[in-house]
Length: 550
Ligand code: ATP
Ligand code: MG
Ligand code: MG
View 1 (cartoon, rainbow, N blue to C red):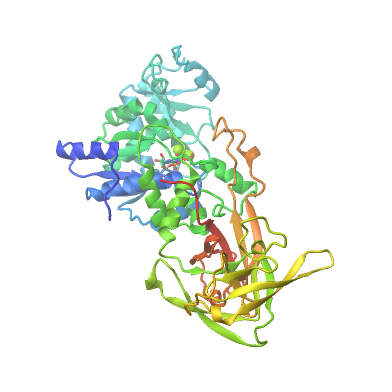
View 2 (view 1 turned 90 degrees about the vertical axis):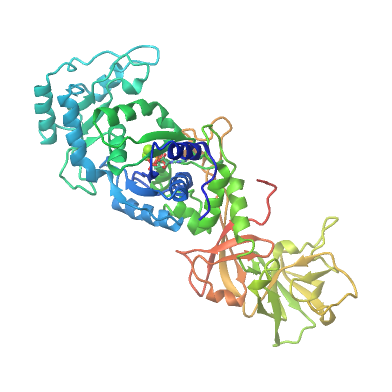
């Protein structure tokens, strides 16, 4: 394993170890199981696991399942799979819900210390009485309940004697605090709902801000790393650790969340796309989920290299999607076999090639990686080329096929276009060409030069294939890349293009998730759901070139 990337949190870890504040680094990745993980989570996963790894510490995978309504075992399983696929092994696997008993005890402790009270106000009233940045909040009429009364009411909340929202437990801190999070935050609420892990054992559930520091402390987490929007929660985090008399003293550090152009990065929004059938599930290749990226053809290596490059800081920013693409190209450049695929076929007949004859030509598998060897591809009288590689009336500097012009067929011969066949509607349906046997690839022919090289697939043995090409699912708007209300209005109607073409015969053996570079088209992955041996389906991962530089 490589060292974690240099960043301010790593510097803190180095200092803490040097100063003896901690003897072992313990981090955690704490997803809420309310959806599939996305590339933003990958940033957090890499940060937590690589940091602990570098300093021989531990990282837990902890499901933050304190909200029974939105959580599901399907999500738990997918999250485990995605973390493993990215290449990480957790030390402990925990559920926040395993600690409900202990959290309840700590809440009782707060009540006994006069630091928590049961409030009968509605959520609406509580929100209003919390004040604003410029105005202090006002005390609840229930704030001065006695310890005995609070213990009794909280016990009755736990026993299910009240309905949802009838009562809450609040920390008793300071309704005039300049930090609104410290104005008596709610720490327990009533939810009569079945929980995926604890079933019907509980009807009161701890709030995230109360539960999280307790979870961290129970597990001995030393560095609790979260995204910047929790910065204002840090005083309450420390308050809980202190007042609940937790033995371990975890500390919270915040970093900038990952945003990427032309996408949304929130489980809630991604779920909305799934629920509205705008995509084919969480693993649709257009989704920024880990499972979507995997199905599209991304590798864990590419995602981890990307996360390393974007770094960890405290400043807000949006990363160009092309940066992610850069890393998959880099990863596949030397790994993926380079073969030929015709996405929009046009039939070519070589009129001077003997009928019924097939010859086998040698084709290298990767011109930049000799170790990948070569394969044999058939050549005969009938071929497919790309419709784009022919123009009847070409513009200047068009070096591909046009009537009377000669081009090189990759790995094969020069061919010359002699005749154009059209249907009744006037569309070009076939080209009749001649080939020159002396120009065979690898024969050392130098007699004359041609300016264009095009790809092709021999017709009689070609494998019919489907190609799926993608554009961004969501278009950015100029002012706000992640505007709450409007992302469903910014769906790109052209985000999926499906083409029917041909690939080389050996593609019959291609298995799900195999990756190829199709000459001149880009990198493609065999779709894990739609592909069948007789009729492979390929997802385009990325085109070959981009002007983007890292
Ligand atoms: P979402 O809004 O997508 O549900 P979340 O923060 O609510 O995101 P959690 O399941 O709570 O999702 O996240 C688990 C961890 O992943 C948290 O520590 C969170 O900070 C981190 N995380 C989530 N989104 C991003 C992101 N875009 N960039 C970096 N880290 C992220
Ligand atoms: Mg969330
Ligand atoms: Mg969250």
